[in-house]
Length: 372
Image (cartoon, rainbow, N blue to C red; front, side, top):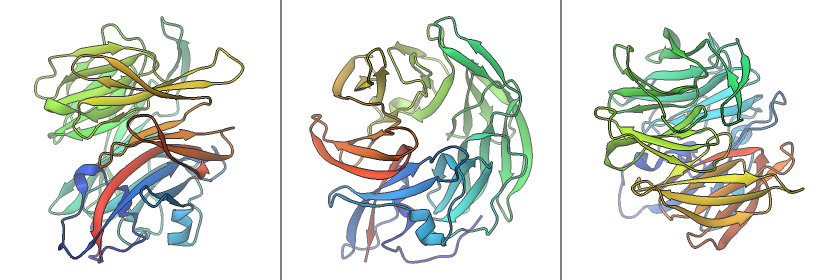
């Protein structure tokens, strides 16, 4: 999928680029802009998913970005977001199940109609590129079948035994190239060094990027819970969050050097990784009292040492770490049906800013870029 060439605009969705995808510096005359893209999931079945932009240094927030760019509501809940370095933004949605592809420079929809074929509760997406265009998308899906159980540690277990990922050919109109069964309860998906990593109920399945055959299954030995989110860390090591239990890491070369760190973690396994790949940031909420209390911490990926950073007297639904400033973002969902509060902390735990975002903020993406 290609997009037309444009100059970078002040209101571009390019703010959702990950840190490794900063556009090429055009000249020293251009102005540097640092923006945080904020993902607002929206109430389920209410069609209220949206995007927000936050200017960290200026302490300014712009809400309802998708509607402003396209003159219409997204009309769904945002489940996952991915953006390619060439500027194609993918929004994975539930209720209804669909994927929108957006031009990251103009903010306009690349396709009038969303992609909907063979989606059954999509959960995550990875994008591949070829010849400076997005060529392939990989989308994990739960599937429709569902079983309810419990882990040995008492954590509830939702099992979707017919999970799969779709392989989309994006060379023209999005077309399903292949549907690949991947076990139970597929969640996050990561494309790294010509391998696909898929978080499933029992661990992480590894696939050959081209042949799409399963070549490894990495299971946690001491952590009980479903694998959730995937990130690539320092020394070519892959890390996965384990629902409510901690994190597991392993070498991307031969899947050896497995490390498991056990600690209290949020049920969704939400986390972010530092710019140098040395620390994972996450949180855990204590509901034992009448009101929630959430501890935010970082974990040294070499030693496993857990450092408490700060706490909030409320629930948290999302966390992010700005790789350019080191500031930490949290999202307070309030009642889960109202606008969230995004708090931005300095590395020492002091509060930098607190702003109102959209409904049910669930994640953050960061970029520095240069513009006129």
